[in-house]
Length: 246
Image (tube, rainbow, N blue to C red):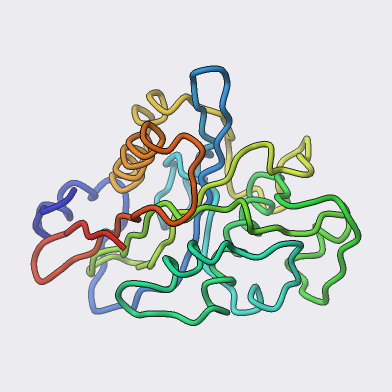
């Protein structure tokens, strides 16, 4: 997608995202790429969105959604690494440390809500925030130290909804509790662990395929996903969708 014009992006994504009229400010959002290494193969967790959704109906996606300001006030067992926090705060529209923390926590929360996977450490956890009561019930303290910042992309103008999405990654062994019936929201009709090569061939949005390709490249050079590596940032600059590095 790097270097494509807005018109070319609109054409490529016409079947992915409903186009709309008028300027819309992108909202902060986060998505979690949960990985599972099986021998030499890496699998990724993906779910199919319900066909009734206005945003990416029927597409396979990573768990994720909008960032809630309350996410920044949830206690954690461990914080983001300093390097990942620095990267999250960098780039266009620099954000505070609290906002970076909220974005990372929203990816963990959405992974619970949509896939029934609670990332963190087993232990007593209490909070007054309604969206985090599942962690309290199952005795999981959210943890951020193993979460890695992988990519960022801002939805081009002209969509029904626009998001400034941070793509984060974690490993399956970071999951403290895996609920057998999935998450409470039932937003995803089907959840599957797909090998990276197979995931790229699924019915996925164009930007998701691009992020998977970025992830494949990074894993070859950085199989442990160490913190502080360069992060690709996709956004429309003037008339072209460009790739920068944070």
